[in-house]
Image (cartoon, rainbow, N blue to C red; front, side):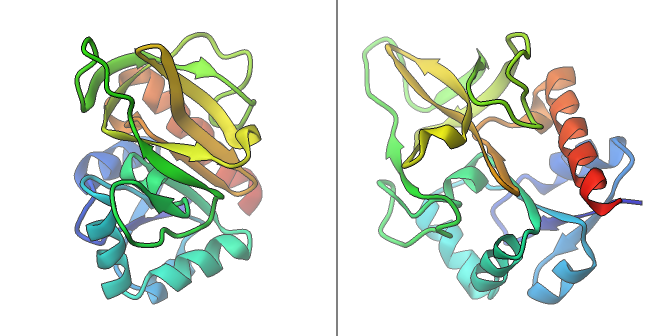
Length: 209
């Protein structure tokens, strides 16, 4: 059985992510330290809250360098919501350095009178570069968002989906080699989100075979 490590640093929606993965037939292993990562086929980094407190919690759990080492050695990882933002180098929301697994900076959503912040609710994905999570020919998928910041990657080729926010398009999902992430919540996005998680698990299982 595929073992998925769920990073538990006190700032993630662990229950709903766990249930979504278990419904797809994988085993979920709580990861609170580096040792627990070793028995996993892949990791999920969830996150709800602010950038600096999240990085502080990861530092206190001594998980920053192990996560960098995991991804640097080809380990597969999926970031969700704040978990996507933490993959980047920095954020306008705080002062701390991010995990720096992806080049770029997280920026505040543009403020417009007709689009309140946070961006909360359902929105259709605008496909970008194809990926195992969301192929190029995927029909418009409506997914659930709750966020006030979005990643601005240095290399736009890693953006596999965007979402419209006012007149702007902001990053909704990224994929670079063995690292994937969603700004939206696939575990709260109904059958479409479930299909995405199933695709990601299939990709993880193909690497383990």
